[in-house]
Amino acid sequence: MTHHAPLPPEIARRRTFAIIAHPDAGKTTLTEKFLLFGGAIQMAGQVRAKGEARRTRSDFMKLEQDRGISVSASAMSFDFKQFRFNLVDTPGHSDFSEDTYRTLTAVDTAVMVIDGAKGVESQTRKLFEVCRLRDLPIVTFCNKMDREARDTFEIIDEIQEHLAIDVSPASWPIGSGREFLGCYDLLNDRLEIMDRADRNRVAESVEINGLDDPRMEQHIPADMLAKLREEVAMARELLPAFDRERFLEGSMTPIWFGSAINSFGVKELMDGIGTYGPEPQPQPAAERTVAPDEPHVTGFVFKVQANMDPKHRDRVAFVRLASGHFERGMKLLHVRSKKPMSVTSPVLFLASDRELAEEAWAGDIIGIPNHGQLRIGDALTEGEVLRFTGIPSFAPELLQGVRSTDPMKAKHLEKALMQFAEEGAAKVFKPSIGSGFVVGVVGALQFDVLASRIEIEYGIPVRFEASQFTSARWVQGPKDVVEKMVEDNKQFIAHDNDGDTVFLTRLQWDIDRVIRDYPGIKLTATKELM
Ligand code: G4P
Image: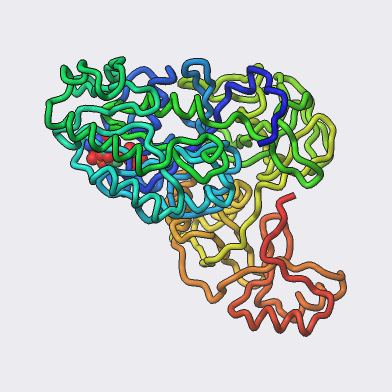
């Protein structure tokens, strides 16, 4: 590891992270407890939607709608001990999507939640792979230990095998299901006893002097204590000890066991993220790598959210600050348009409501309200021309036609689709022949999410239908060649939301044919965002 000067304390105390999980593992519940212990919300609520109605919403939307908690934002900040946590919301569908990938470009750590009875599930694996693409450090929380869970060694083995990562137990569960008493904290040699009476309270923490401390017997029945001692001895022998360097490089994950609904294990997990989790990390740009402690402010847009306030059709661009100390009113360079931009009303999502951000530091996420100038991937700096390279644009892998089932609303559909295209929620292509639209996504679930958002946010009922096209390519090349190609292939030509020319294809053969027949033409699978 390279040693460099420590970061300024305000930057060093920041921990920016996201939670990944298979649906139902407990991501929403854990988010809620984080906010509760972070002082961002007062008390966990009661009412909530069930099943499918909930699946396609993001965690924060779920919290807001189900529990009446106002967290209509994509990032929430809260303090815990000496740390400032920035929790970035992940998209409502856990299918792999650009959205998920981009969210993960804005964080320094991921918390992986698994269900103690189910272990590694399909979406856990997909999301884990996305984290691995970026070598993100991963902290694991094994939830629902108050239910009948699998054997602890079996869970750990499954993670090690299925995800090819070493797992080091940070805590060890004592019993499971109705017998679940709590955990032995292996990092601090403490006993944590779960309080079943009050779900919002923190567990009782008992200082003890190692596993052989006679005080253990006051809290744990003899047979369970014997089992615990035996298991911990085995774990210490068979499983790797926690190694922070390996955690930071993404090849080892510490695992905590707990029960989010009972608030159990959550504080230890937060402690772990704070103590071991990385500080704001350097961010790669085409020109150079930007270090968090550089004096000048830089940042990049990783998400654009429209319709946050149904009364205004404004958008909020979420910016991850890569360096510097931001102060409200600062004039920043919007690198793509080369225009200065006064950031007078940035929002920081603190506690239960949007707040004007007076200042923010590298690692923080600020929201900048705008009318569409800010796009995903855009860089903001104090004058330097920088292009952050972490955020790719994926070629859509699935294409479908879309139309409104209410013909009266067809006109509004175009507006809605353009909005989603600018948010980066989908690729939208307007074919040069005909009146419909073709929508491209990376994961099939995105179609469901789009359909429900178009209906909820715009009141337009829509239907997605099969399209003859299977892929899209952006067209570049000498002007006359491109014009000729477009003229000859009108039925396959469309334009994206920026007006750029796209070739819709059915087979690889279409691509080969165009490349052969139109010398100099380039068909690209991704459009650089910058
Ligand atoms: P998700 O966001 O990952 O989809 O999961 P969510 O938190 O919504 O939790 C899924 C279900 O698991 C919820 O039950 C939730 O109450 C339950 N749950 C979460 N953590 C724990 C835990 O530690 N122990 C137990 N026993 N259950 C837990 P539900 O029946 O779908 O909703 P609800 O009616 O309980 O609210």
